[in-house]
Length: 153
Image (cartoon, rainbow, N blue to C red; front, top):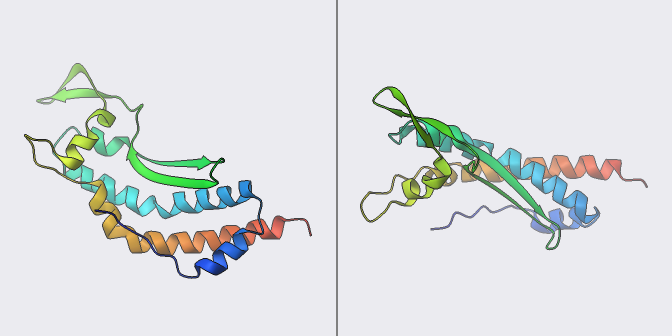
């Protein structure tokens, strides 16, 4: 299952983007993408709280953005921080066991042969897709306006 976000005015957007150098295009898109994915992160944290565990999964969720210069693309996503480690809690007592949510988040999201899936990321993206598209459009427009104004003419 794939969630798609449609942006209206694509031709106009691409025309305006071509004015900027590649590095500035990626910067504008990365900032806009990170801002647009904030509602998804908030919703995913709320959904992860509903998963019965120590709360480590919800606390570990972060927003990640990547710029790829070779292909001139930008990627933004929400997921558990691979470096997040929490103290284990069992029956109200702290244990010596360290909890690393990045190691089990996919098992919670997709389920296993023995446990049912408890999705927290997909429903967050699906419910916030409209908001993501609106924020992305607004932020790209603001970023383009700002960067074009800075260009030496």
